[in-house]
Image (cartoon, rainbow, N blue to C red; front, side, top):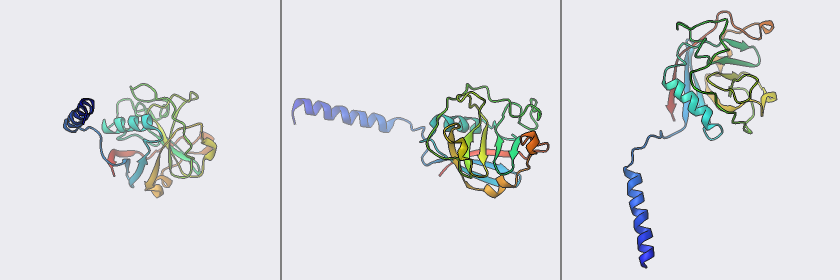
Length: 195
């Protein structure tokens, strides 16, 4: 072993020891968003490889308890169910306003679009946004039928693994009201599990 090789090897060993003694904050496994509804749990596998910033935001809001009590304010039969307005859509909270649900977000800054090649098939989790493609904040939707016409315009960041029958059973709003629900179902509790 030459002197240069010994120095490089020594640096690698020291670096490896430093890394192994550093605390690990990363969870092992794939993150799942578990939405517990009054009718049971909906298990959504999150897709950080496709949309890391969207997944990171939903995990942060979930772990802070922000989605607990939030209503499905817009549910269109044969299309999708939308929720996640932590500002106006959190039933029982001081700021709850069903007439404004769908117009709010969190105190965090908006997230830029992370468009990907995943298609909006039934059971896909998509980022709700305004006309600005880079305006995702806290709201999301679950498609209940093929919605491939949304491909490339909205960010896909998860897919339902189980509980689609419960999503199908959510209270729906009339077409003429763009799916606004008068007596909406809600997320009783949202949690993150790593599987």
